[in-house]
Length: 427
Image 1 (cartoon, one colour):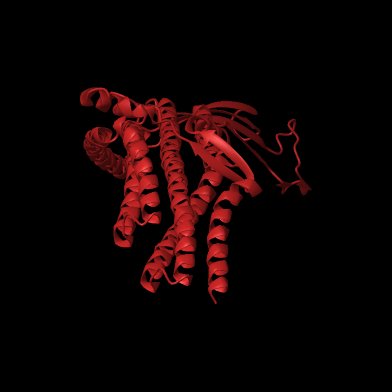
Image 2 (cartoon, one colour):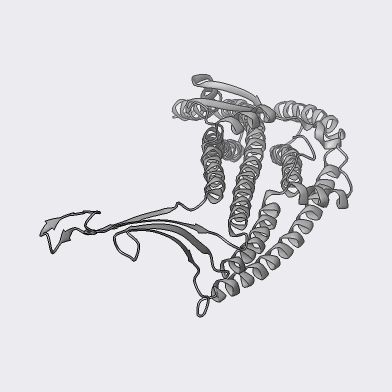
């Protein structure tokens, strides 16, 4: 019975570790820095390409707004002559039959065409800003996924190391138990510890798999690739500019803020256009009439203008005015949100920076040595099981907290860059 339990335990442990290590070996491992990932993302991401086409579509509407209205050509000719009983009959000498031709052109007044072009340009700016905002959001998600994947990978190494140590302990205690030198309680306690670590590793691997899927979609990499992120933690010592300067940078670079500004410009220009549309346009035309007036060949000049007695576009003007007022409120709210987000991001970065220092590296090394010494002390029965298990759990929790601090720093950097709309700190 002991042999079967031991084999099952070893097989389960090795299968978990083997899955974690073998995943990268069975596929193409892509070791990549964030700068390299960002470059690949900008070149290949399909969401960006799709939004870029929308920008090009609005640019085409600018050219359309510049075009003149087409002239209108109309003609009128008798199709049946009652006297001659003929169809399409025309005899100029006998003054029989009629041919009428008219050519007319609409001329816009009050600068309508220029105002239409300006509104089209405003819409193009809005689309460009939305493209930039999409890129800003996707880059933020890329940075978070990249940092979290790096963090989970390091956590996996902690679990693997502890599982390896716990497996050796279980094997040794199992032999001691079989020899009658160890109690069942101690053996079960260690097996429970090992089982908990194995479950933690499985959950860690599940999260890694989800992030791998999302990153491969963002970067458009091969579906069988295994992304291995390389992080640079030198950014922990970066000094950020003062808050007023960061707010000004955010106003100049944040696409969502600029988009609202452009929409306000568009609303203002649309109001001017709607007022211009109240002015009547002029239609000018020339006509030629054969055999239908006092002169056999009649040439006429036509000028037409609608009389604005009922429809002076007053409803559209009122609607455009309210739209402008609404957008003004949106801009003010967006500016207040921008300032608050910049301040919060700076404060969060400074708080995280205080926890992350060069002393952590020294502490890490000392803590690893202490773990090795405690493991030896337990194996040599210099400390008891309860003391060792408490240290074992504390060691794991502390190592994971140190890794979490590194991730929190990377997230604080991503939040600061996201809040300002530009790269204040290079990840």
